[in-house]
Each structure stands twice: as C-alpha cells, then as structure tokens.
Length: 241
Image (tube, rainbow, N blue to C red; front, side, top):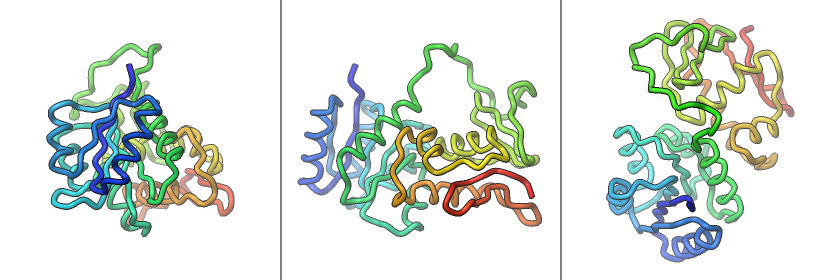
C-alpha cells in the first residue's frame, strides 16, 4: 500500500505543486493549509510521514511538531523552511523534527528524504516484535553497546553518559549509535549521510553539522571530555581524549 503523507503548507502554489508531485511519485497525500488543520488531520487519520512548513499563520510547523511529540506521536516529520540560520534549524530539531529541507528545494531532494525517513521507520521482517522496555527498568547488560563512557540500548532506544540518561530524537540516537559502534574510527561525511539518511546530500549541505552540534550539546557536561571530534575535511570520530 502506498505511504500516506500529511502535507501542511500555507503557500497555495507550493502546496498544490508538492501535492501533485508526491501523488505522481506514488504517495497518498492529504494537503492542508495551516497548523490547526494539520493537527486535526493527524489526530483523525495518522499518516506515515508528515511534511510541515515552518512558517504558517496561527499554529506554525514547530508548534505542530511539539504538540505531536508531547502526545507521544513518533511519526517521522520533515520540515520545510525558508530559514537558513543554524539556530533556526536547531529549533526544528529541538521541536522533535527528524529532518528538514530548505526552500527553494528540489522536489527530488524531498523524495529522497522521505524515502530515508520511511526506511528508518519500516518494520524489519527479520526482527521479532519486542514489547517496549519500561522507562524505569534497567536494560539487560548483554543488550548494551558501550564506548567512551557511553551506554546505549538500541532496542529500547535509550542512551546514557555515566548515570545521566540522554533525551535524544530518532535521528540523534541513530547518529550516536553509528559513532559508538565505530568508536575511534573516523567516519567521513558521505558514509554518515548514507547510513543515517540513506542519501548523500553533498558537500554544501549543513544538515550533518547541525545534528552533530545539537548532539554535542546533549552529550557534553562540565569537567568531562568532549566525545565527538571533528576531523577537518573528512568527518567525525567518537573518542574520549
């Protein structure tokens, strides 16, 4: 069955053009013009993925994202934004978005990012469904991966630095897991993009740098060494100096 997309965009021309392009690509699209309609539709018929414009009258895309995340809704969210400053992009990630595309965008880039989000949330046929781990229950030791003072439970999607549990979005968790599993190894930008997003957005993209910066803010603590290091012109490495 074709994936369902809830598109919220107040610009009529962009909304109609993107709705048509997504439909031709094989998606089942519900398009709305503002955040109020987006929330109502998401509650009425939950989609497989949401595409939200950041700047909308009334309830904007960031507020829609925050409300859904506060309700425990983990549906992947792709933000559309004309804001290019790093702080603006971080605001979207902080609200719980999984990815973003900067306007004006190439529709093929939107398609690529949607495919990557849907791949990451698709159930795996070879993995039996497991009941969720209660928040207070400790993870079995054999299920943890460790590096540089970090512990991660991939199945429960929980992570700790020392005794402090980290509050991570889906993308942040997957990025940290990739770095932990390859601790001490320098991962180049192309490898990280391919493993996390399923698509290399090229040397001009700042998407990875934004996520690394935001992840550092959640990992770093006073008096403790920085864990994620930049290797200029190459990529990133996790190590405890």
